[in-house]
Length: 479
Image (cartoon, rainbow, N blue to C red):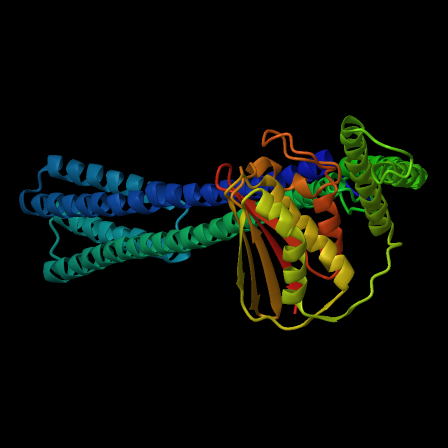
């Protein structure tokens, strides 16, 4: 499957939108052309025809007036006036015939022309009778002329009515076409908006989704997880970046493994001579090597304490190395969490008394848990010991337990200096200590070991703290 680049996706989307816009524009131009044509027809044909109806009727009435005056006084000027009115009538009738009218209007115009000719023929015959002085049926001619004129006027009224009806039909057609054009325009606009939205979402998601995965991968790398498992369905540019992440993760994993191998090897190599130094120091302190002065005892005590600290560091490095590599065996069985906490408090009692720290227990009933008792004791020692270490003299350390929704919570709170929010996540990393809260001795491995032990038990651990208000470490375990 070919994956389009980000630029190609943007260009493709814009082209589709432009095609839709162009199609909409063409449709709008065609509709405007139709509206213009219909409007032009109304103005130039129908309205003109309505105006000509009035002029034709006026011209026909002028003919009748001149005709009647001529028949009464037989003045030649009235006869010429009649001819001028008739010529004007024929001109306007011919002009109406060139307007491109409908077949009904065309038939009506022909009828008007025929009736006007009939009227003119009757008038000319009657005028000849008058010139020759011959008698004629004047009443009959008058009746026939009135009938022709009235019929012609009725036809003109019919032409006006047909023109008005045609205007109404065209206006109705324009209204229908306008509604149809509006509906189509709204539909196309909605389609363009929907397509544009979907296109924007698709392009944005194709970029943000892999970036979100890579952001999570960055946090995993920061937490020490160096798996090269990024395989993202993404644009080529981001795919290449993901491959670079995989390469970086592989190299970091190799470096981390080399580092842990080095620490493990050095720990193994250091533990034996450190044990020998410790035992030799103890023999000197016991007087097995001869009499020891007070000054020598003081120095030997310092050497013993530092040996114990180094042995503890070596053991912590070995434990963490085994935890990370999965080589440390866990033996799970039902255990009483309160008994384990009580045991750790008893062990930590001398340290609390030396610093005059009050240990408060707020334990609620919790069920027996499936635990590796020794490893859980190790985690509790690290948490409670850490709280005692950072709590000042005359402070308080609180230990509480509770059960909620198939989960058991252990909280260890102190009244120490607290932890800034920007450092709250990093304190569970190995060899990391929070800067700026005192240079207390430590390896930076205790909380990392706690995190691994709790995770192997299927739980999680986190800290809630504010500078100056102490810290609360929360352990969540499945019930």
